[in-house]
Amino acid sequence: MPKTLIVYHSRSGYTRRVAESLARRLRADTEEIEVVGERPGILGYARCALEALGEVTPAIRLPRRAPADYDLVVIGTPVWFWALSSPVRSYIMEERRNFGRVGFFCTMGGSGAERAFGTMAALCGREPVATLALTDGQVDAGAATALGEFVRALRGRRASARPRGRSRARRKAAA
Ligand SMILES: Cc1cc2nc3c(=O)[nH]c(=O)nc-3n(C[C@H](O)[C@H](O)[C@H](O)COP(=O)(O)O)c2cc1C
Image 1 (cartoon, rainbow, N blue to C red):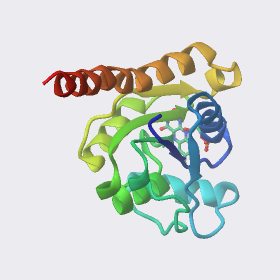
Image 2 (cartoon, rainbow, N blue to C red; image 1 turned 30 degrees about the vertical axis):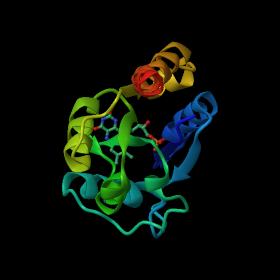
Image 3 (cartoon, rainbow, N blue to C red; image 1 turned 45 degrees about the vertical axis):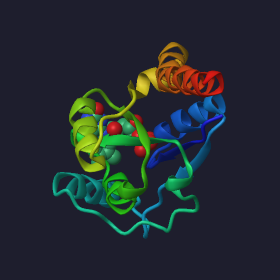
Image 4 (tube, protein in one colour; image 1 turned 60 degrees about the vertical axis):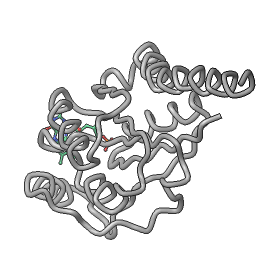
């Protein structure tokens, strides 16, 4: 079974909840991206905003898992000022040479997903297998249908890759 890693940053818990639900459904490992230093309160919020707007790459803690060990890396971010969060930008910049296939998801108050996904694809240098954008209200409601569709889309590519491999093996066996 292809190995999947869910990598995410979460400041207030929404992206973490989605990541944990996806990890259960995909039987995937998880990696939380943690920034160096606390960012509490309104000053912390302002710092996050400025970093997102300025495309800053803050220092993040060393990841525990190597993305190169996985067939699929699914990256999750909260939307910050219609952009990806700065810790996820840092992670992608540090690890992008080690990605195979990628998928993206985000959580948000209401808008900015498409812009964030566009930037993530450009930074990764590849298009995602699938994307999922959820508002905080949808996460609170469980988002079971959207999560199920996203998991099926992520698995779809894997499933379509298998018959090609098998038929090559069969052709070889028959030769
Ligand atoms: C600094 C900052 C900027 C944000 N900017 C946006 C935004 O542009 N659009 C939006 O829909 N939500 C925005 N939000 C709301 C978050 O995207 C949303 O609450 C998200 O689910 C938080 O994820 P988390 O709980 O995993 O940190 C912003 C939140 C923060 C902290």
